[in-house]
Image 1 (cartoon, rainbow, N blue to C red):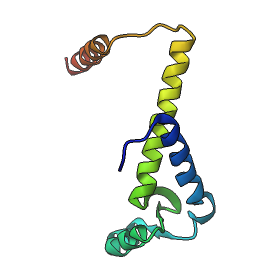
Image 2 (image 1 turned 180 degrees about the vertical axis):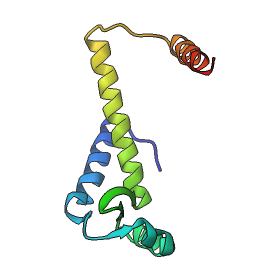
Image 3 (image 1 turned 120 degrees about the vertical axis):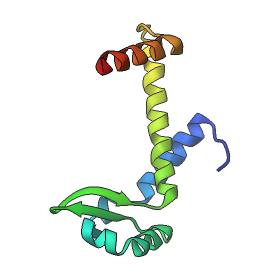
Image 4 (image 1 turned 60 degrees about the vertical axis):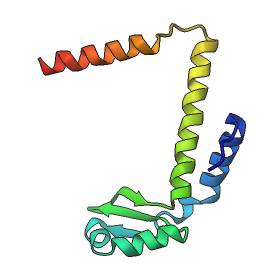
Length: 115
């Protein structure tokens, strides 16, 4: 996948997710966990052809087998959203920490929980 600018990535990700029309088609192709296990290859083939499958447990959606392009678009959209949030924090002058401080804090918390 070629590198995109943040604006291109934002536009592409939103367009790809929106065009996929998940809100309309998600419930059209569903499978129970048991069915998904038994027919995983079929669900993967459908995803390759552009059709997502929603996996349900006890009638509630819990996962999905989606085309990789849709998954990548969702990841791109999440990256754009996080970048916007970071920019807003910086613009508001809110306190920030360095990566070293963040890692030190994370590892100190991990050490406290293990003791």
